Image 1 (cartoon, rainbow, N blue to C red):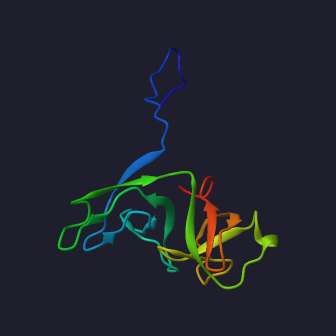
Image 2 (image 1 turned 90 degrees about the vertical axis):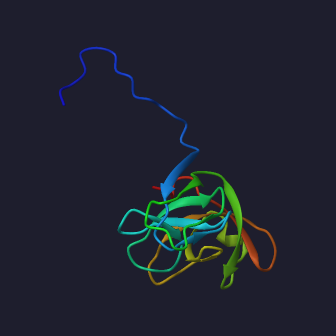
Length: 137
């Protein structure tokens, strides 16, 4: 495409919520950390290869028995959310990145290093608040 020579409508949208096609037989729960896999379909986050973090599920969607893309799930792209934490955390961890262990658990380290957010608060002995801004694709 050539450079612009006149005004061009870019169809801007704020991008707070984006809908993704759900992978076949996947069940997404509202509030889950979610990823697209190497097929580009939405799956619950996990410490697994070929995952790209896209955000937090805005709604629950059950695509059990459905083909990939038969259903779509809306996903929040920014904000701060509370998840269970795996391993030891201290106040000194505020500002550090965390990685997905599951769709409801984060840790400071993981096998596949899928960064899903930054620690903003230690909620209690079992949970941490993370900010996902700048970590979603």
